[in-house]
Length: 424
Image (cartoon, rainbow, N blue to C red; front, side, top):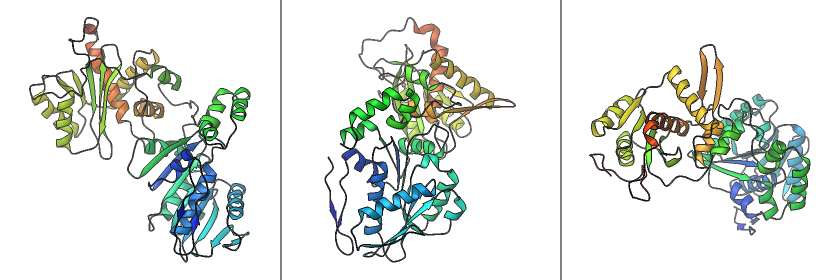
């Protein structure tokens, strides 16, 4: 259980309310952007109420504004009433018509806003904000709130129940989960709340019996339903998840970083299981050296599109086993359809984590010229691309795989260093 802690503001003493451990870790993190996907009644709202009051007390001052933003007015009013009820009498002035609470010691003001009209959220300087039920708010509202935090560099907590995969809250949660700078991701399930002592296990089990499985998983386990638009199928992806292989690789795929993206290397063993996975950001020099140390003399397919072309040429000058793959609309469609078939036929095994997350986030759309396959706006697809390249290389080597055997070492993976001759 999390213990209440004392913090010293400019005047007086602030005592943080008790929160259970997972709840406190999810919300009281150091990141500027804290994103929480949570089940119903898991304590996300209470935790963020405490967080926003703490921000207003410790970082407040005259004319400093702190915002609670909810999808509709009645929800904003609920938060207003609950925070007001939790503050000591005489420590604040409340305005019922404007839905504001002014804390008398630091003289900062907490505003309770609605996300119904995003244009009304522009213009103010805000020192910290909470977006409540973010999956039910319009993305325009998030953009407006983000603009108010620009001058102050204020932090924000973005919280909500899971509601499918086609909303901005889902996308920003995936950014946070993938480790983007400045982000922190947390999931709070009903079972976390049971362990924390704020929900009864019998109540959760009753809901599990009565509700459809997809509804229960969204509301109580914070697991999004399988929206249309994912080319692989969420259940097919789940069926391919397993432990990472300890066999040697027979094929490797490499996606090179573009702009803010990541370089990713994926190795597949002779049975079609992922046996190596690396992801990093760095200079081209660092990336080249790291790729060479990972691939040894295993057949490797590397994205050679655009800036990748000279990188592939330099890799090929040192490794005979490197081939390039140029992306066009047609070649990407063919590459991804090969990966779709492999996953739907259970020919691949992938480890849980970022590979699975990116596969589940991936989308396809039909256009006049064919299908397009991409990550949603703002998310990454580097892991999916590297996996698809590895599978393409694996298929090219497939005729020989039935006779492949480990060479006596219990563990040879792409991550065993190779010298410049490409030998292990």
